[in-house]
Length: 545
Image (tube, rainbow, N blue to C red; front, side):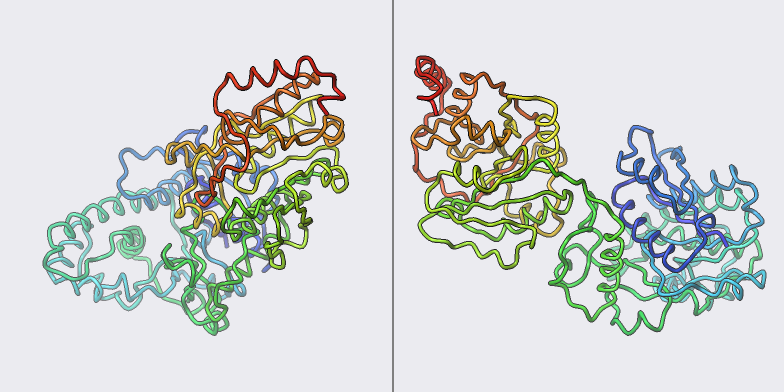
């Protein structure tokens, strides 16, 4: 039996495939019998993460096909479209038994392949309650007959076989490329027909037929039109994320679908992770009495086999100024965000009159220090033993890609002061909430949605640790900021010491809850930089330090 899934080459499907393939491997489905089909419009559209995954993945066979559909209206028609190409390219599949499935299923145990392959029958999951003739007749006999006419199938055939109206997961036998071509054409046709009917009749009915099921009707009705016998089979029954967890132990398949984004605080919602993965995200707040928790367990099991980028020569230093930044909740999420992608040492230096930061729920990998004054120089000298460090004021959310680019510069260049950002943008409360849930922060994705932020007393920079100490560390008496994140006094001093100054050409984010207190001398004009530089030129290095 060949297990085949079909999906666009997108990040949203990549992490689902990672979970699924690990599950298939765990239950010992033969690697050669797993076909993963991925579609793309242009090769340049394929995310690098997918290309890297395919190169590294030793389990399963991957096939990339160009999506050549012309003006498709139905997103899911990409699946029969690619299957048509796959069967054309691999003619032997016409004689194989196919388990055609979604990318969002996992197994509790293997289906009974031996029994399901004995007969010529097709076998399907039970979806009778939303694709049977009885379901369609709820919207009127006229609708049912018109839909059959549109497809060109005898309504009596649909009615006679209604009890076995199944889909979602299929055991398919003796089909060739032409079958999938017909499924593609007819699924587009049915999708357009149902949508048109819904528009014309929405004022007459409380509920309308689900157009997104068009490919399910197309597969089933194409099978009946070719005289294939299709049977619903208990082995293909599945539970949903919202099902009580006992359902998992009575069924072999969990279909991770049907959870809306607004339900993310009750169940795991895959829709939240369209642009990032759920790996290394904390879901402990979700209830465990539902099948959703089983899928979370499978995510965690897949995490074990994933490798983060190990950074051994650079530490991250986050300064938490408790009199400036209001909420501390986001800080835990920011630390978790960094550790989701990087294996790196992180230090938090809290400064203020009294300690207020509760670090008990932070990652055990975190190093914490409390300092009463604002000067971090001594703590860096005493606590940071890596070759380099990146300093981040806690009001700044510096994306991981900025961190990685900064580390690369520090590795390849000496005598340099690096500013790991170009501009800062305010992060809205809604986007902060999304960040907390997904641990995903992507400047490119969010570009243009935020106003540039100007908060003049916070900064982020990176240096060689010993150079920073020799350079004199912080000068808290002189703070001048032309823009957020960039201390001009430090920059002027660096240049006079003979250091290069380089900016990372990516944005960072500022929290909206920063209290804009006048705690230091802040002048926002370019002439101030020249004044500092000219004043410093006459001083010796000893006097500068």
